[in-house]
Length: 134
Image (tube, rainbow, N blue to C red; front, side):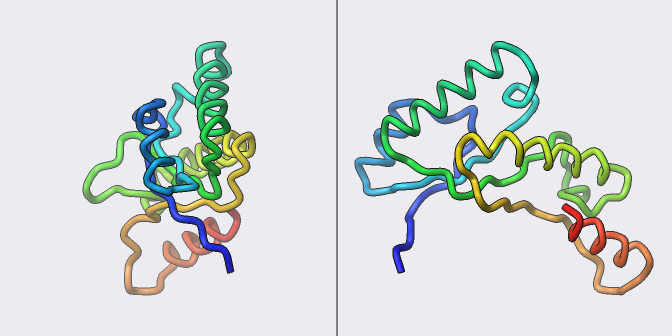
């Protein structure tokens, strides 16, 4: 089995110096996070930033097997997909991030789902159905 060794990094923090360092210390992959609207928007600036990041990772032969979903406006008790009042919005954002990650070859997606209650109830059951749908 050939395991990859990498790091998780936010898109907005990645520059050539950092990617060159990752390569120099033997890392061969990166888990991308922080894919917010400035990367996803259907604008020339977002497309250019995405293409530049893609080119940089290609130059150093750094793969992206996994993306970590990022959601704006998360607070200490409202992380991830658990909070019902944000779930639809965050699931849609997750889908947009998955679509964006296809360019990079991302095959796996991860996230903090949030604080899951220990008691099974109608909210828990709906959360599990929503998570399976995603």
